[in-house]
Image (cartoon, rainbow, N blue to C red):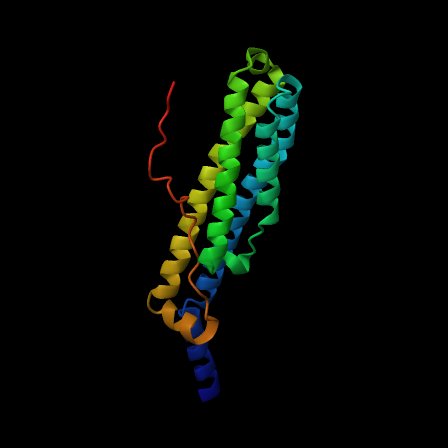
Amino acid sequence: MLRNALLIFLTLLLAGCGYNDIQQKEEAVFKAWADVEATYQRRADLIPNLVETVKAYAKHEQETLQNVTAARARVGQIQISTKDLNNPKRMSEFSAAQQQMSGALSRLLLVAERYPDLKASQNFRDLQHQLEGTENRINVARQRYNEAVRIFNSAIRSFPANLTNNFLLHLERKEPFKAAVGSEVAPQVKF
């Protein structure tokens, strides 16, 4: 009888300690990060088609095309695992590579502005629209990831779940996605 009462008490105690809740929140962080990676992969998949379309019209813009291809290769070399989500250095490297990719794409789209035939090409317009939509998806995925990180980090620091984390799980805070250095300064547009 005492044994059953103790078992019931321990079950109730564990049910209220937040163990499962913390696990679910960490899984939500991993899922949100996978969504970020998926949207970046979508952008990376679109780039070869965009480069080939521009190549057909702008043969003498080789340097810009090579920069886009090189940036895409750098992005592909930096892989973040779920174990790296609490490593500020790895997250910063990933962010920097993605920022280089964004810059190279911006220059590519500026090149396209110089070629009215290219801008009129249905293939180019379709790719440009897909790329714009993907950039928006990337932003949304980053925001969702940061929200999942906020919820998780709050959970492992709040009582009583922090006790569960400190004594049983030992999970570390996850790193939110941060803006690239210098992005707080608005770019100057000159015509």
